[in-house]
Length: 330
Image (cartoon, rainbow, N blue to C red; front, side, top):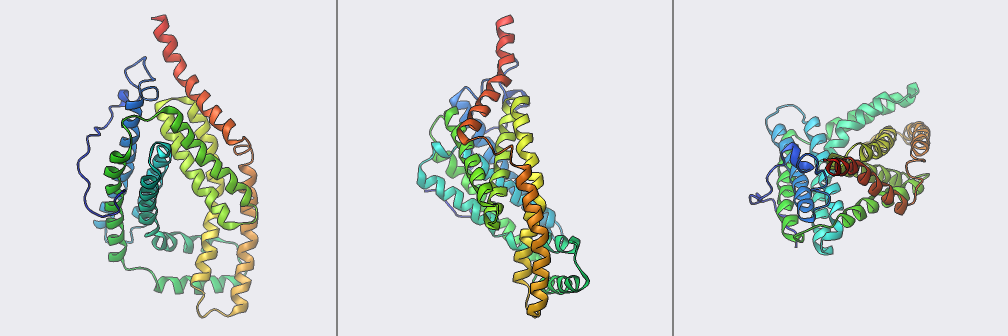
């Protein structure tokens, strides 16, 4: 079973890639994606890199006496990247190990959700277009939240513990994976995340939780495509940019969804009429943002998962084809 302890992981034999090694020697760009042993090595290294980024964020927060909003953001982003890599290798892992590592990453990330909300929600709420009465209510809620802000020492401790827990999953992943990883299984991992995102987009027309899920899966998909583009080239990068554009459109709506939860959490002492008035104003703007984001993602998420997976596989082949032609010419 994958460990969820906070002990330091053992040193793993996953040396960093030189830039040219990511795609193999010049003129042989298929060495990673077409070599099952090297593909495994590359993906474990990517998972290790994400874990190290989380640790670096926690370390930076430990040296700063100010509220570590940037560190919390970088830490949570790193863990999302780690989960994206995990999804790429999920078809190669036993179900129990896959679930255990995913749960450890999820719990490490959620531990900083409150700190994230305090960093994002007040600023978003202060920027919403509100009437005078609604603005007074919003200011009262922000004041309530300020009194509930977790102590700096607690945030730093959660960052350190979460980073250590995430680091322990590197060893768990290394031990659970087979000696090789098939390229087709990686494609299945991308297809699975795309499928989850696509279904969440449909459900997110009215369901705010589903909309937020669409955003999370879309972010993971962008990380996966960005990673693969680094081993392939411009055609995969183009696919990455398409999905990344959708996540940009989703961001404002997700921030306001966070504001709704923030308002509900810190509405103590607020008159019911004032609370209802603020929620109506927030929801009116949120409906517009959600509609705009779903419209922006319509084309990107129109293809069925199988068709999207075929497009990705074709993009990889096209990116690697020039190197093959050069070899034939030489």
